Image (cartoon, rainbow, N blue to C red; front, top):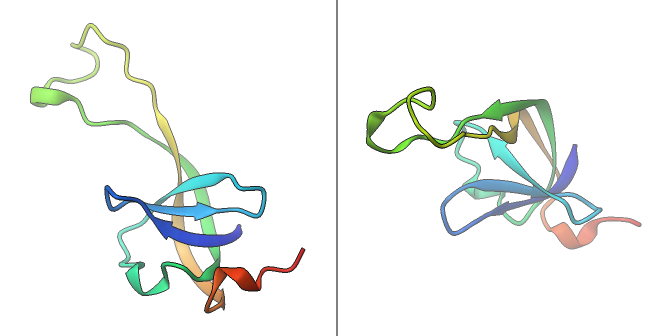
Length: 88
C-alpha cells in the first residue's frame, strides 16, 4: 500500500492514500524519520481491540467493545522524500 506517512497528535502513525483515506498503522518501528515522506508499506490488516478501563475485560463489561482495523507493517520502503511527488 502506498501513501503519505503521517503522525497524529496521539502519536499514532497513519498512511494517507491517494484516495485521501487514512489507514492506522500498527508497528513497533520508529517511523518518525519517515513522517512526511511517500512510502510503500508491506503488511496485513489486523483487528485491534481498544483497551478497557480499570483492567476489566470486554467480556465483563456491560459495554460492547468493537475492534479497530489497523495495518500491521512488516516493511517500509521510501518512494520519495516528500509526499508532493505523487503522480496522478
